[in-house]
Amino acid sequence: MDKLELLLETFKGRNTTNPLFSLWKHFPLDDRDSQRLAEAHIKFYEHHQFDLMKISPHGRYPVVDYGCKVAEGYDPFTGSTSCEECSINSLEDWGALEKVDVNEGEFGEQIKTVRTLGKKLEELPKMMTIFSPLMVASKMDTNIVKHMREDTDKLKEALFVVYRDLLEFAQSSLDAGAQGLFIASQHFRKSDLTWKEVERFEIFFIKKLIQEVKKKSEFNIIHVHGQDIKFDKAAEQIDAEGLNWHDQLTWPSISEAAKIFPKGLLAGIDETQSLVEGDEEKIKTNIVEAIEMSKKYDNRVIIAPGCVIPITASNESIEIISKTIHKSRKRG
Image 1: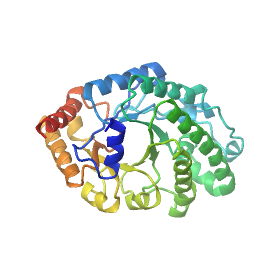
Image 2 (image 1 turned 90 degrees about the vertical axis):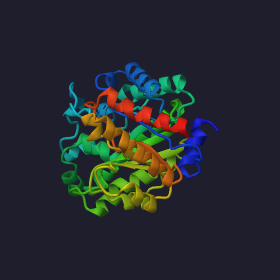
Image 3 (image 1 turned 180 degrees about the horizontal axis):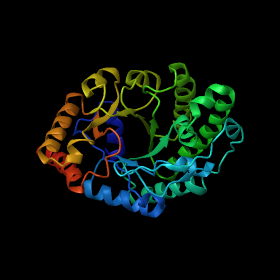
């Protein structure tokens, strides 16, 4: 059984070997260049030898081609980026939104990264990070809820433009060497949106995206971002092979999630406290517990962070995770 086959069996609870694991983080500054970003991912993988790679471009990559200007700096904790200037400043701006060519510009740069990783790490399952259309729109417009309610139809029409571009980008990423998608959503948590608005503007487009990519994508993971999340709604309404969430910070626990969602769970690593503090014993204890929890649920828990590993976590701390898991495998 090759690595992809084992991963797909893991999502179904049929991995009879060992729990799999994945690690991911941002690579600030390197993520502004496709070749450097690919090299950073390769180096990270070669050091830790995990089972599933999440390709992590900078957090504002999907809005650059729509006219947003990305700040030169980055968040000192997460390593993520922000917009210095947003391209949408009025409701009229949404009406003028035009399709972009995802094989050129910033989207095209990310596809170059995927293509390099596909050639260099052919046997390793890789998932490209995609944001939901509404999440992309939220990065372009700081007043999106206001504009949504002023003209619902105009906003939804604009979201279709974004959706079609993201669909093409997802398909191009899969053609370039990714086997799956990591689809991030920030809207399954408490926000200014009503649940009906979430269903209409978030869930609708995620479901549509997954339905369209299924012919090419071997698997799709949904990242349910934030605290006080509606994990059960994501599990119920989204047809994905796996769910990822901040299990160390918010409901549900892995045990609770395993009862709600019968497929893959990406969770277990305490990335925001013990890993950042660098307490070796706490990190080891955390990972040993995650391994045991995965075994309890037929190895369908892929040991992973709830979100990006902070860039303040030292390489030595991250290495404790991979060494602990590899030692556990040797012991059987």
